[in-house]
Length: 281
Ligand code: SAM
Image 1 (cartoon, protein in one colour):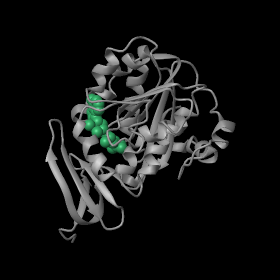
Image 2 (image 1 turned 120 degrees about the horizontal axis):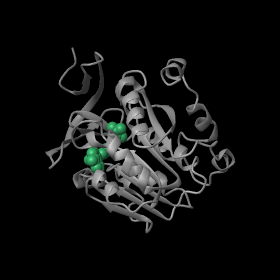
Image 3 (image 1 turned 90 degrees about the vertical axis):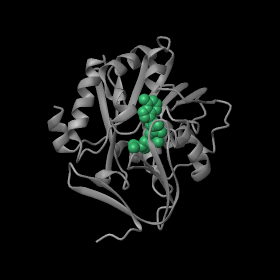
Image 4 (image 1 turned 135 degrees about the horizontal axis):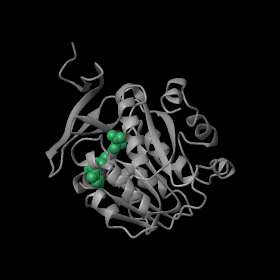
């Protein structure tokens, strides 16, 4: 039996759970949108939990944040304007701003409290929040994209919670249609697309909705993320015209530090498992 000193995220639908031994709870609050908790863990540093789901840990967030940003940024031929929908812990924003060609990065999270807590408990993720190219907005990402001018952004990164609560509408055709309109011709939307092992139903539904929103070309990248259900995660890119090969030379010659991402990891993350290939053949 687990003692009371463990945080556990149970996934009843798959009969699985992920646990971390905790030293203490550092904070909890009900924000206007969700229930937020911060724990100090024994071996993973700090842990942010939203509505009972693990979001970010000090130890392994680099996997997710790097894979949500660098593959899409090295796939677009010349990205300058990026929006991050969600992403309130600011880790994806920090990775995006490592690319010197980025002129403007706007993070749009519905819940300002997530960012305020990240500033206290994950200051390293917020290191680039004062970059003059960065803007932080605290409004609904669905509304932001709906009201955007056509062709006004190169990349939209949807770094959201699971498709429930305020994030539900971020997985729908209406939202993708708005993304399609807001993106420039070579634009790309990329969205965290859950576990390929446990959530193929979500992955399939998401692709259907993306297609209904106008995107005919999709590519999924796979990466490890041990604090998320099954420890195996994905992000799906969608474009208006067929996806071209990523800028492998630029990725190989990148002038910034990463812990996980490099050109070989990028190439490997595109390899499709057989069951996935069959599902989307
Ligand atoms: N890495 C995480 C994952 O895959 O579970 C996501 C982390 S990030 C903290 C998720 C953020 O999405 C939260 O801060 C939440 O407030 C935000 N969010 C949810 N729905 C949103 C919406 N409609 N518009 C903008 N942000 C939203």
